[in-house]
Length: 232
Image (cartoon, rainbow, N blue to C red; front, side, top):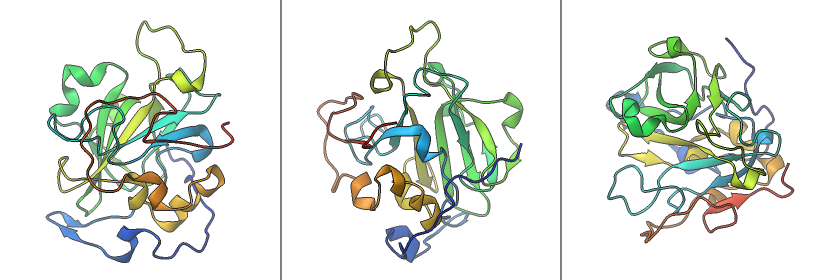
């Protein structure tokens, strides 16, 4: 089902994004800038920074940090499984890899890949409730993918968004081991949609360098989590 694109206003952000100033080529074609946000920024109260100590080590078990981005819902959507909508960030084909089907991926929702058309760019959606018929089908940028699963089976709903479950997105080039900052892969229009929530530069969404994490946390307020002010 076709949905309207999320993020439609434009500001003067020409070449603010490192990825916008060049198009490296992978084995499946050039990398793709994402033209649609995976979620409406108005539905989100916090995000994790790339290369942070949030969540868990990723993409590999021996990774020194979490090289993906987590999203926390606003106060309307916390602890829900059928309300917070997610969208295709590019035109492409969905798929599930053997890793997506491992038992560890079924604690809340499922995991799904979206391979952008003619490109080396892939998005991996975690904690997503979606129609099984979606797998293997082509979608357009902005199409509805499914709902964020923010509460596990049998769990008691949390009392506030700060303690709600989150969902995460990993953007990669060529394979899942080569991850990139989601916000750095957005085109100018899609990134500009975050300005009303306080994100105005890529530097706000990434930890410099490659920090080694001795432990990980998913508590809002801890380092590595950017909280929007005011929260919604």
